[in-house]
Image (tube, rainbow, N blue to C red):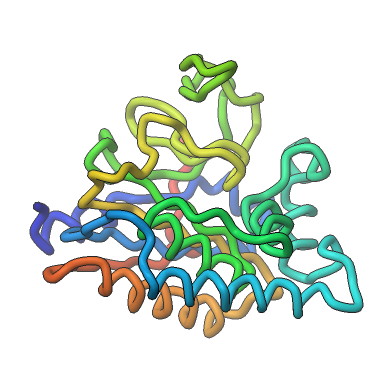
Length: 244
């Protein structure tokens, strides 16, 4: 278990490199550090939340295409700014909404909750096991040398991001590639996870009030997942930069 001061300390040391804001000055992130979670299998509450997310996704794309949704389009353009091809490596909210029309995956309580909130509010959300972090989370443009552990053909392999790619990382290596595309195996949520880090990425046209509403909705759902859930939060904006 982590006390409230420990959760606040993790977030106090989080930062975004000024080179990231040079790409997208409108970028903001809400970070939630959470302790006291009880993961476990999906339950009836999760099923209702997932159903609401699936219904919202179908309604959002009725009469239009997914690529034309303003929040999806904003992330596609952001990917292009650092050389990624959005049609090949889709941002996490686009990938989820593509799945939502046919049915979101049921994984476990933690994953079901943050996937559903991501679709309902149309913003990327990453969920990770905070106990597996070494040092504070930070968002940078990669040098290309940082290690990223992932799986290929059922085996764990170490890859490296492209130089200039936007990545979340800690002291050990990359925790999520291409801003919010793919998370590392090392910090992924597990059934035994009790302490989590949730990263909510926002670009215009999402407003601060919409981002705050999404963070409140996620916090409310996370409080369901344990009898003593504690949550610390921090919003990172272009005043929270660090460049070397």
